[in-house]
Length: 336
Figure 1 (tube, rainbow, N blue to C red):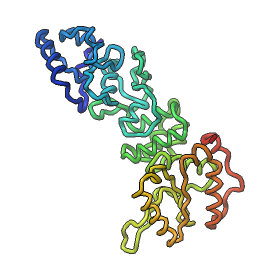
Figure 2 (figure 1 turned 120 degrees about the vertical axis):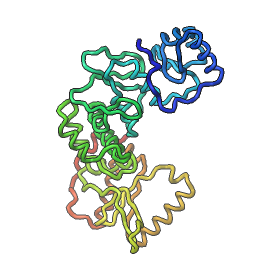
Figure 3 (figure 1 turned 180 degrees about the vertical axis):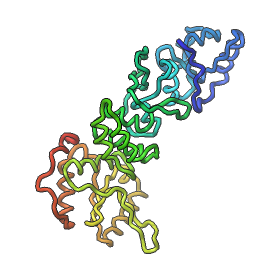
Figure 4 (figure 1 turned 30 degrees about the vertical axis):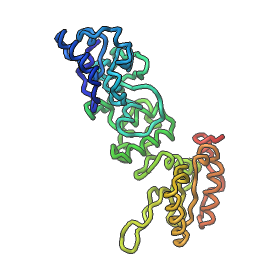
């Protein structure tokens, strides 16, 4: 296998003095430099004079088959990414879930490090590695010293892996991180002719700027899939001096109706709870109505959540609401 010590890894950490001394002495004796803070293989260890059996000791950590690192180095996604690229065919790049995390996107947890390799090459089949074939026309960039799918390409690649809701969550999070824009995602999805193009196009059109959390995305999509008018994202109210007075996650400003997701951490934080009480009193004075949705209202009781929102909309004077909600929401939010 190719030498693994040539790949740079950001912030690799420092080896313990004993471990560093052991490797340096062995390397000097055998005329080969080996930095145990970076991924290396058994061949590298042998050339540095490190017994192969020593790799099974507590001094080293196994990342993948025949890929090791000093045990005192923090195993980060960047470290695993560099290791996988080093054992992959020339021209490979990080993709799918791994690329999404590198860009700061939100995707479901899973254990693999994903890499895409050129067609016709020998893809890695190591445990812990998700191997893919590079799609024709895929956009690859360099980031933090690593070859990785561009943010828009990552979004498109995951169109065949994620549900529609999770794909929009990813898009919203990439836009929030400043990695891409809603327009760029739509344009990239429209121009893509490969697998997942339809799902990517629909999801891209549902991505919005200014979304603060994945649960806010899910709440908005629950409403949209039910056929309700789409709420305004991140509406800002200014005071008489022109300064920001209030900011609402989701709202219908013309109805003076706010729909917000509220996580349990708010109830468990006394300071936040006090601020929430004061805020709600201010909203009452300004005649805004606030509907608070918790996690169970999305995962367990989505139908009840929609009923609450519709009732509030009608109470606030909404006109033209559908007599019956679109059943599409049930496919994406089945509840219990």
